[in-house]
Amino acid sequence: MNIENTKAQMRKGILEFCILSILHQKEAYPSEIIEDLKGAKLIIVEGTLYPLLTRLKNAGLLSYRWEESSSGPPRKYYKLTELGKKFSSDLETTWGELKEAVNKVQKKSSTKK
Image 1 (cartoon, rainbow, N blue to C red):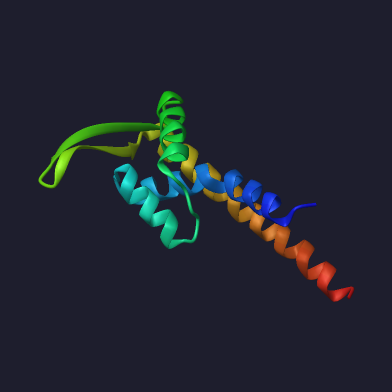
Image 2: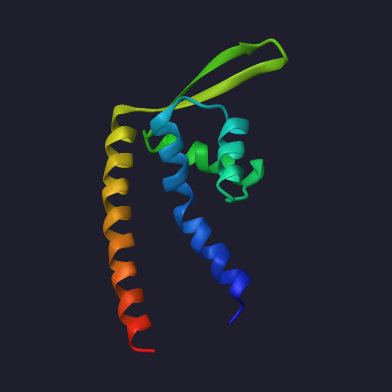
């Protein structure tokens, strides 16, 4: 098995959750989202982010607004809808449960070594 492929698949699996978590904290435009993810060492490119944002918007989890920018073209700011806030909170609960379960499995396997 290829460890890099496995790591990439794990990152893809939590990317949606991370984007929703960022937008749960604040409105953001795509470049800000990318910077926040890079700061967490989750590298993502615009070609991956934009389709994901569109999918989340089409699912009713996000809305957006345009804002003029003094340093270039207008920016599209994304924010969570009420449905998106609920979905994000549900994912937060699921993430906590999953993290706890994985930690328990890791502790059991490390004590058997």
